[in-house]
Amino acid sequence: MWWDAIQQVLIPEAELRQRVQILGQAITDDYRGEDLVLIPVLKGALVFGADLARAIALPLTLDAVCLSSYGHQPVSSGTVRLRKDLDDSIAGKHALIVEDIIDTGFTLQALWRHLQARGPATLRTCVLLDKRARRRVDVPVHYRGFEVPDAFVVGYGLDYQGRYRNLPFIGILHPECFQEAPPAQSPPCRRS
Ligand code: IMP
Image 1: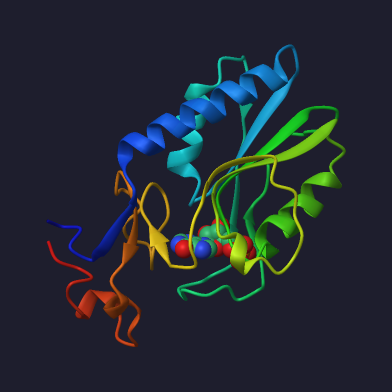
Image 2: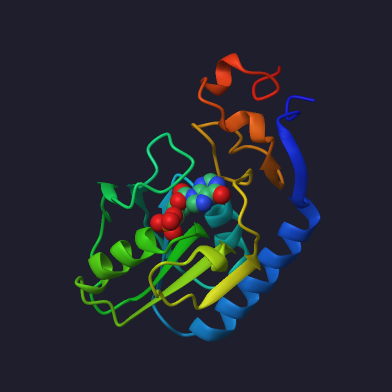
């Protein structure tokens, strides 16, 4: 398998699909009649955001921001960089941030402050994965997919050094993949 680098499947595809439908239904119920703007955080929430948008039965609009906080390291640098801002104003609208995972909370906190300053009617967050045990700052999570253990996970949009985003499930990487050598040179992190 090309995903031999995965030590354990944490959340299988069917479970992801089911949970995303439940989140979509909850958001549909909460925002009925409102002007909802969905804001996936690229690139990690690309896959989740696309599925979630289609699970919401409302005439929403989609924007996106692109942030980087990890560079190519498996631990947060604590410094959040905005690489792409919103295209349109969210003033007076109901903005919902869609994030792949919350770990320390620094990324979401920085984005929350950035978007709150744009004057939305409301600002909420929808996070697929929550590594609650590692939280360093308090950020509101209004919609949560799954709580996950303190392990580095990939798949369904989440990456390690740019790879594994296209896995259809969430999995834990083999520990060898975090060795000093780039994964491209250390099997099983990159088998074809
Ligand atoms: P935080 O700022 O520490 O909360 O980190 C949030 C960001 O770090 C997420 O948007 C992800 O891009 C990345 N991240 C945190 N944990 C993981 C993980 O286990 N796998 C992949 N990316 C992660």
